[in-house]
Length: 108
Image (cartoon, rainbow, N blue to C red; front, side, top):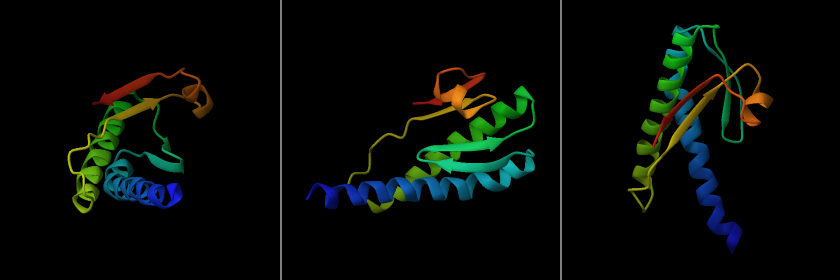
């Protein structure tokens, strides 16, 4: 029974991620940023080495996640669940996962 209840939740998260990627892709491309991979709940994006670009990319990723969340949750029973977003930037994914990052953008 637990698996049956969990499938809908996992599917919803996946739909949010795919829709967010659809929203962010054109703008990331215009910033010369490239989506390299998506693992579990993390995008790996290659960006120019420019702190201004980090900020723009982080803001657009957070906005895309929140927009996708609003759109997808129109189809679920509970409507007022918040979607906090945290975007971390660094040189290597392993370093970021270990807590060593050069950029942080968070929306509660």
